[in-house]
Amino acid sequence: MDNCIFCKIAAKQTPSTIVYEDDDLLAFKDINPAAPVHLLVIPKIHLDTLSSAKAEHEALLGKILGLAPKLAAEHGCAPVLQADGKYTGGYKTLINTGTDGGQEVYHLHLHVIGGPQPWRGQS
Ligand code: 5GP
Ligand code: ZN
Image 1 (tube, rainbow, N blue to C red):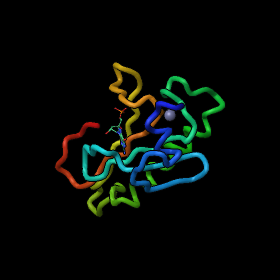
Image 2: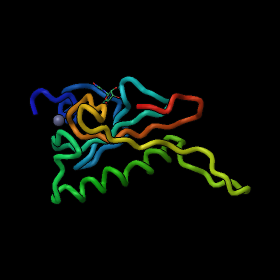
Image 3: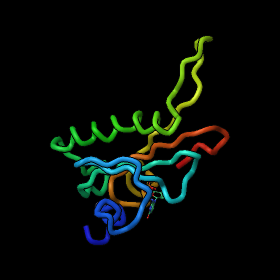
Image 4: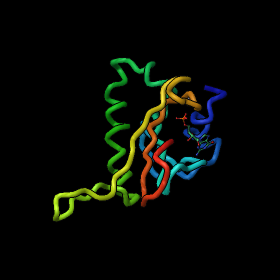
């Protein structure tokens, strides 16, 4: 898509801070982070919203979601089960879809948001 900022990032025509890349996915730092760790995971193909994903995209969606815990762990946000049975750490995963879903960039992306509190739990 010519006018899509995330397609341009995927094509390396627009710079970003890339934290992961494979044949299908790219992950990079959000330009306006809502938390100490704020990453975006995108498919390299252009899909405008989650609602445009079809059965043929299920494996891709699985890859996107499966990458989130790996990135979170690499960036120090993995949840940790303490000896007292309570958890510390962790992160949010978020896909905004459509206008009422708060989507601003119409190229499917998963937010991975975490890091040491306090921060406002929003995207
Ligand atoms: P949405 O509201 O669509 O779920 O989130 C879009 C996200 O993309 C926002 O958090 C915004 O800060 C981020 N963003 C928008 N343009 C750019 C850009 O050019 N580079 C990077 N790294 N992030 C962007
Ligand atoms: Zn795109």
